[in-house]
Length: 363
Image 1 (cartoon, helix red, strand yellow):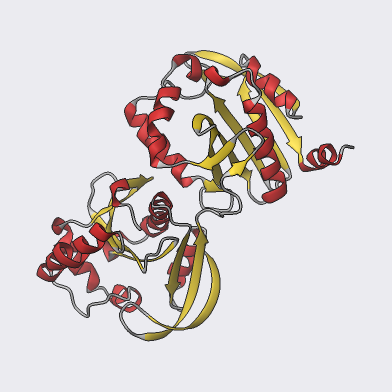
Image 2 (cartoon, helix red, strand yellow):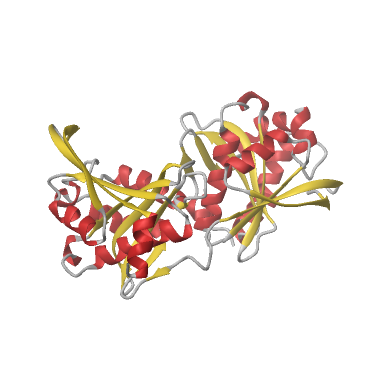
């Protein structure tokens, strides 16, 4: 079921939030647009401000309460003005279908692309594993948005739209988290995707000056934590729109740090890895165990050619870890980064897929 307590959520310039009666006039005006009427597959033939307000009070409220239907607003993140509607329906314990339309006054601003990413985050935060969508073959704009947002075409066939019409439709699917991948188990650790519940321990860890000392960020505030958690929730795989994967490191059910892998060159399959471990759990090999697992995931599952790790040269613990997991020191940049009021050096470590294969085979 859909967990509406995770709303609102924001991605760049777009916010996904509950539909308000204050949106009724703009919503009704948008549904009169020719493209919305053709491609929006709206269940009602005509909408007025009064009918939209009634819909919000009745069908929308009931669906949100039961978690079986979410008729939501896409809004400009800065002004909160309504820019379109996004709907999640046909909800099961594993999947839902998404549909959307953009108000004609807001087209060309990227809200559709960002809205689909927000829909994927919302569905993922609700525990769903799959998001589907359908669009008409002539709706090229929708097809581009879906593909960019990590959806893949799975079939074309005649079907019934939410408006009750029989049309040829292109079916799309986005896997939010593969059950075969997550959680990733090692000998002593469990690596899982982030959830909204991780905000507390992440803030406690990253707000500590001794933890942030060699990181690019200052110690986290409550506002920064909210933004960082939202970012991590979106990083569910290198094949998605973010091109990044963020995982929690757990030991016996307790979160002890996090680790991330992200693409730096999609075409040539190159990525970068970064990690932070709670100092209270240091010295036991947990960070090395997690990094080895994610390096293997990057090379074996995502077929990366090269993975790098960059760090402040004063961070001797991270440098030693990089060497332990078989990464080579490729560069030492002198005073190349101005961090926290001073010039600092950067170390760059790297590992190739061919080197990982040789180690795995015992060569």
